[in-house]
Image (cartoon, rainbow, N blue to C red; front, side, top):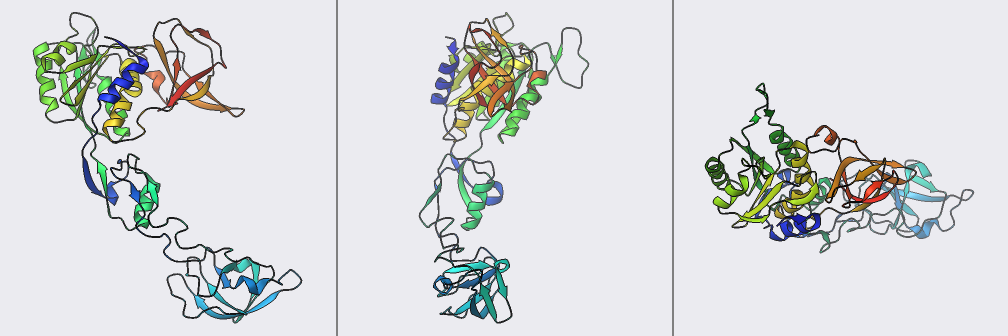
Length: 402
């Protein structure tokens, strides 16, 4: 029932149920996922405008202009930004205007101040212009009816700017998944305790919560439970009433005290896979109940974080409503030698760097299940095929950014 790397991501994303929607105001929209296409309801800008402080005129009046033969135009009006022109430009005339000011009737070109010689009531142009030159036309940014952003996209600063430009105070988005974190294990102590021999501090709680918070999910810690099947089951049942996804750490190996899989089944979860052929992060269990998912991850710090980042996040992105939920594989080269004797797909965490126009993955040689320190500053993973043996530095591999 253990799945391989590609199979488990496909299975989990197929099973993942997207959240319902809600309406939020623009100030709360950043980082949320659009539930409907964002369509321009009006032109932006809504009028023809000037991109510069300068002069607006008829391009036809500058046909004979040159460095040695300047064209003189009479200045008939001065238009600050936000003011409406009162006069139309006719043959031989120009209007002085500021950046963003409307283009007056009759004008079809603009020249910057610094490219003119001007006086109070006249301006000299020393080059010829074409109709439309230096004019920002209505709808040049967005035209009414244009699809600007598709549903399933994340709202970033650009989308927020689009909303404001269109006068949109509110937007329909998918609800944020609420994620509950559970820690298990007799050996686990909290970070402000001094661990006894054989005990370890609960780093997983903070590592996983920090990573999920970086994705702007709503994350809550439900506590630590000892290796007791009844108590673990009770914790799962309590947690599921309040969240959309449960993530636990510990208790998923094959030992006598690894009771989380049994507790999941006791709580009514269908087990989708009791592991995945990757390293680190093989020890894991994935279940579903009434559309709600539970990811039971290893208690080893690097294993749980790797599994979360590489296996669980695509499903969580699907749940959050993102249309592009899976990682996009890119070509990269190994910055140093790497040997994979394992029958499992190796996921090596590292940092993207560039050399001679090529993308390299630089990584710490310590990639073990418990080595959380090599995840510091990690922004990418390399995907190493099973039993690939020694891959020398410079070998091209597939990988993805996180």
